Amino acid sequence: MSSGWSNLVLKNFDQAASTYNGQARLQRAVAWRLAKHCAKHQIPEGLWVDLGSGTGHIANALETCMPQRQVLRVDGCSEMLTLHHRHRPSQLWDLNLGLPPLPQPPSLLVSSFALHWLSNPQARLKEWLAALAPGGWMALALPVHGSFPQWHHAAAAAGVTCSAMPLPSQSSLLEVLPPDCIRYQQLHRFTQKSAEVFSLLRPMRQMGAHSSPYPAMGISKWRRLKQAWPSHQESGVAELTWLIQLLLIQR
Ligand SMILES: C[S@@+](CC[C@H](N)C(=O)[O-])C[C@H]1O[C@@H](n2cnc3c(N)ncnc32)[C@H](O)[C@@H]1O
Image 1 (tube, protein in one colour):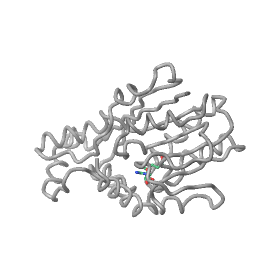
Image 2 (cartoon, rainbow, N blue to C red):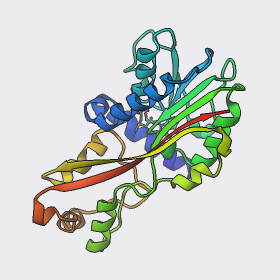
Image 3 (cartoon, rainbow, N blue to C red):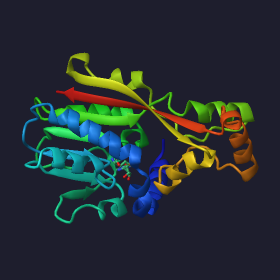
């Protein structure tokens, strides 16, 4: 995807920075889960970096689990970085340009809910792995292809485009990682429920996570999408399922 895409993604996150934390319950829970997996391993001291840190969910969780460590927060949105603790190191950087200049090879790179927003997740993943110090670790969490089956089903049934962000497949991520480097990998399924279809989708906009490569839909198409949402009409409960890939890799 183009630099126009990257600008759109960053602009939407910038504009939603002040409402991000209030909506990002899933992101916070996943960040904690990933940080606890990291804490089970002897990750060497050195430079620890959170790529696409947003407001710092995983950086904060890592520093809470391992209080002697400090994490450099990197993000392309200045508004997100202003929400970090004043004394925490941070760097404004567009990760589509590659990694920022770092003072030493990192011994830990973490990234949660960010890699899928980058233009070429496979290329970034290869780059991040190659940048690690020998014996260094990478911890990743991101939604993958197969997420939002209800949304895709409703769009097909209603004859409208599913405007959900296209996501990388689990296999496309695993194919660029040497199998003997993978220390943990798990696909987690989280299902959000609501009495109202748009209550499932609205938080994405309030978090700035609504960028889509597809044209905006008019209100009548949104109504058709809502009508076609699986089982909502019968049970009164709408669901939205996320598939989240967790990965721990050691170089
Ligand atoms: C969904 S948020 C996740 C934030 C945080 N890691 C969390 O788990 O809450 C995605 C983050 O990726 C950042 N991001 C997206 N594209 C980026 C890019 N090209 N360069 C740097 N950061 C980017 C956004 O600014 C945003 O803060």
